[in-house]
Each structure stands twice: as structure tokens, then as C-alpha cells.
Length: 222
Figure 1: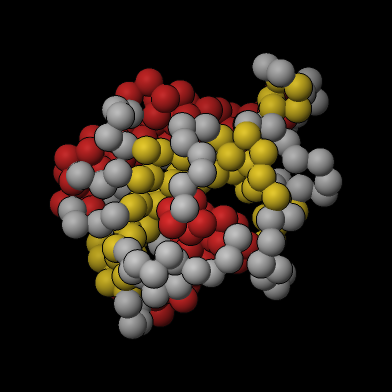
Figure 2: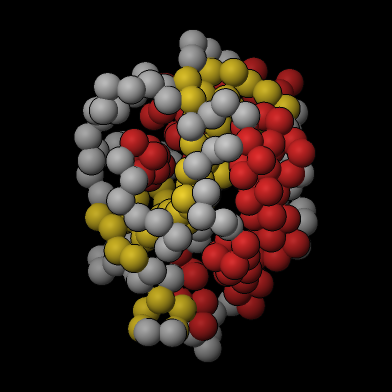
């Protein structure tokens, strides 16, 4: 969990770069000396993302051809894209399909995609979202990430080493970076379930530079 990039600068493409997590990932990657392609739906609305080491481009995370074209020549991809105006299952499965097809065509071997804490297990086979009193509207949204994970598991070939990184339930945009985090595979981490956007970005970049987990949900918390 340090800032060393093993002495090698990478080309990293970030889908959903205009959101809070996407911005944090872009900032962390550039700080480590990597070159970033920041993908948004409308670059005109995100001019503040432009800067040294960053190429701001228009793209569609749900379109395999767009993903393949933009991702060519990159070492790794991060997917932090989200739409709240599209049914969750429809959107996240479309993104997963596009990432699998597009990144495979482009020859990108590593994908880090963002999950949601409500899909983590509190006991074997029991997710947080399975609680009887869990709000139905949040359960519906969470199901999109479950469907995304299942699709990646079923359809990603051996050439795409993917990982779903899942932040704690209290994802804090305003708190200061601590430079530390804890992880667990597939389960809720004991404690308040809090992590800053900056520390989440730290975890994502660590998994690009020094991959330790593959084809699982990796919970990340302070």
C-alpha cells in the first residue's frame, strides 16, 4: 500500500472518470507517474479533468466498439461508470458485456471495476442486501452489481484478469487520505465500513501495479 509503481509508467484508461471515484483514481494514477485516458460521456462538461498526463475523451462504457477503440494500447482499465437514469441491472450488465468484449479485443489484460458494499456477504451465502428490512429501492440497485459480477464470472476469458473492488458502505468524499486500508474477499469487513475516495483509489492502483486478487469481490475499508 505504497506509492511506488515498480518503476514502470503504465497507460491506464478510466471509464466514468468524471465521478468522484473516477476523479480520485485519475488523480492517484497521475500522481504515481502513469498516463491516463479519462473517459466521460461529454468532455465539454469535464474540462477541469484535463491536465498533464491526462487525455480527456468521449466514450460509452456500454458500447463494446467504443471500449475497444479507446482502450487499445492501454495496460489496464478501471470502470467507475454509473447511470442512475437507467435500470441498474440493464446498465451494469451492459457495461460488463462491453468491458469483456471491448477490452479483450483491445488486448487489455487487467480490469478493475467498482462494486457496492451491499452485495458483500455477512455470512456464507447471505449478502447485506438480503436482510429482511433492507430497503427495496436499494436492493434493486444492488442487484445490478450482482448481475455484473455474475456476468464477468461467466463470460470473461483467461486473457482478461478482472477484479471487482468494493468500498465500505460509508464512502467519504471529503475525508483526508490516510494512505492505509484493509481488505477481505467477498465479505463485509469488521468496523464502521468507512473509506475515503482517495484511499479507495489507492487500493485500485495497488491492484493494477501489483495484482494480488483476481475474479473476486475485494472489500476495501479503513
